[in-house]
Image (cartoon, rainbow, N blue to C red; front, side, top):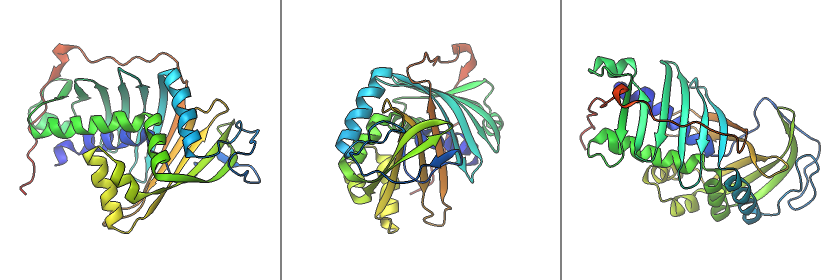
Length: 282
């Protein structure tokens, strides 16, 4: 599995772009006091009363913008990324990932996932700069990576994340906080993991949440930092340590909502087939 380890880690990190939960990043400073949900919060606009209002506000604002720039890092695994996201009827993503194995570029569009070939792929005979995992492909690699791409689209779309929060949780705290000098309102939502599993349609996401549930994780904190336009500025996700794996904290920051994005597939003459992925026997 080492031959695809870097890509898997990159895709897994991209998945977290729209996930939420965890604790404040080092650049966030909490204001004194915790306004009750629904009460005015001058630092980042009026606090929304419940998850239904939160979902409605974010959906309206984000869908009106259609695009966003994002930066993300995962600790302690040493993976980070910077890129652009496009929402709506033609979703896409372009990211440059930095991993312990080196830099890797990725483009996700409707027909599949493109990623630059890493050293492990070259050792498997790949000679092109890019490889493509095609949507609808029958080989195990394409099935795996296009399934992850579907999860990326859903997870990077913040509107879908707040819909999950609406269906599975409740706001337990709001606070005025500064994120990189920008006033925001932070919403902490306690989500019922069993309800998340029940409502999840993506098989990979459902599997991960079911594992947490099986390991005794009953609730998860979802944290959103919204500006005074009710657009997400930051989300932080901390996956609990389970099944012998360490806790991983992922911080995603959003900026330039509505600004132009460039998500372009690489030239056809630079794209080849990925190495065959051998799935372990059942």
